[in-house]
Length: 290
Image (cartoon, one colour):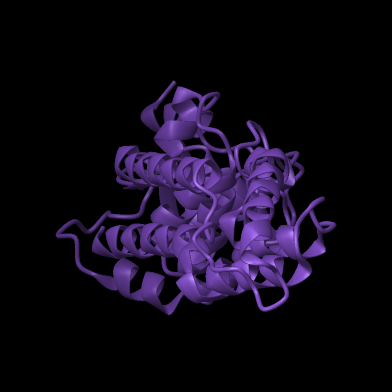
């Protein structure tokens, strides 16, 4: 068996075209494809391939262009480019991520948009969205993924899921969740507005009863929702919960409204959103620095 025969044994069974004019090697498998087909998808790739390498045989079977960062993903990418492969495609998510990976490497803008648009419609875990946003520059995915991660418990996060986010992002989210939890505990423990004076329709000697009714309602209804172990109420929804609840027994209507008005003026219920916005800014800045 001569050298050419030995080389032929390793050729890809489907993506080795006899009239191909450029040879790539991924996962020790050579692919002979068409330069013109590839560069019509990517002007950037045309510029890359046109760069002199110093070898006359570069891009031939004797000296293929080795794709270190792509490996077996190249088969699925070519399957998408040529639309002729009998190779069973992987599940939608894996196929789309594969196309995105190769397209990002070669700056193929039309297929990057194609894959991102379709991945948008899939149910991806937020940690995976953050990973893809970091690897392939998809900043519009950061905000919804962060909002989801803040609402989720990190207790059951696996090492793989944490690695997808990256240590720095995981740390930013974990610290933010701890600060938010402290804010929840503080609001639950100390009902605001207790220092409000009696309303115009409430006698001073009856206002003590209003305060007691407000404190009881706060602990049984509001604090219970804020401190819920699996689905804590976002602080921004606290006011709506209070407004929609029935008037606590023994409380003057005008006194309750006065206490609600004080809560609105203090603007303390927006602290959670401000923390989340800070997380989004920090993660966005970090990703843009990579």
